[in-house]
Image 1: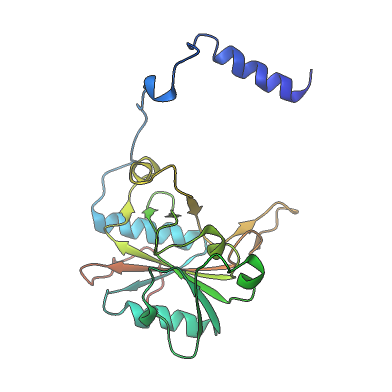
Image 2: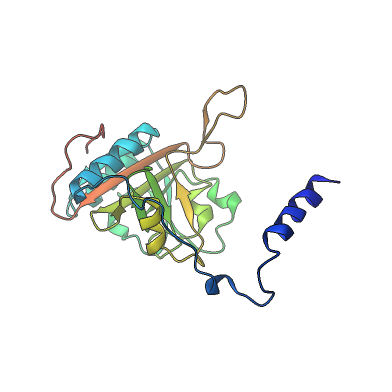
Length: 226
């Protein structure tokens, strides 16, 4: 018996008592696991997010809403980015003068995107307990390919509106029918001789800008400040 036959056989046995016409939504599943590990204020959740992002080797920066264009422009200039791609929902004033600006569109093929230095996006939600950013293809996030091909990704997160404590809380905010991209730090793999190599499956450098609605920076968390 092949491995495929073994797996399919186990699936058939597991479904043996399920009526043929039953749909998944007709059989409620018990959700009795912990939804969150501990109680946190919004400021504590933001600090935990920043700490976990830094652990994953993302570079974390803090900004007020008014200072966001200057912060994003500084990150691009520091990177010496000459060509930047953005989704339609990113304001043009975020980008400094002298940078070739490409708006995300279907004609931007992977070959074209490979000539781009940086991408700037927003996010759908950020998970504090795992240091994960989730993109869902909304107007400020664009197609999945624009955040996978360029070597540098600047992601803007609104704090506290877009920060949740846990993955279950994040899933409640997300539409499973949308193209979801889950990002925990720069792209990296340790498949070869257990040596960490970055930039294999996506951007080598991830800059995360936490924009506090009250203009205050969460203290601590090991994050860089801009």
